[in-house]
Length: 233
Image (cartoon, rainbow, N blue to C red; front, side, top):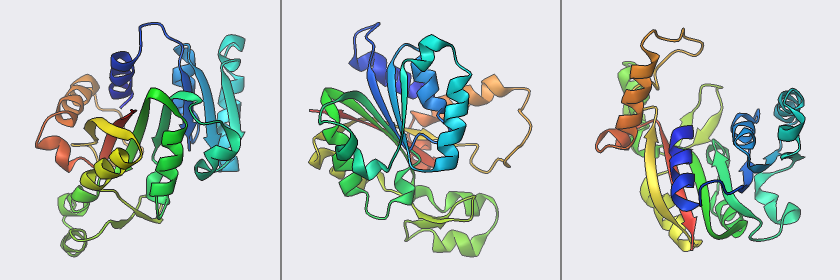
């Protein structure tokens, strides 16, 4: 997915431009640090104190130049208007967050307001149109049948969360002035991999196959996750 994001950034902004990036629900800060290492000014927003502590520890281990490009804030992604002025960022990331938000429209509208004109909104969501794939491939037929007509599911942490449909998000993004520009599938072939599984010897081939499937119909339509990129008009 990092490659997909880099592709969209390269298409939207001049080479070498130092971007203002907001990472909402940044978790352990993996993406935020990657972008800071690339020279961008990154603000990470995270409401989980434990995650924020991990991110701060990781940031402390970075060289001074990178540390100076990162600002970490404890806060809720639905309160961006409290922390920032409209149009303050060129890129806003919201990866793996919407599944925990029961009504995401207000959050998405707030994120769109944070974007400068031409800015990029990057979303990573669970694909509600493919919820039957994981239990089906695992042979859990009762769960498979129950997954067709719902957006609710239980994640690997045992939490009851929700997924999003591509058509619904496309409409929402158009309505908040950050129309969908590109979308990809993520984890087309690897969603059933066991947590902590050993890295396969043919990792490069696996990544190449996932990358190809993630941008090719019909494969991307049944991906576990969707990566959507909206552009502020």
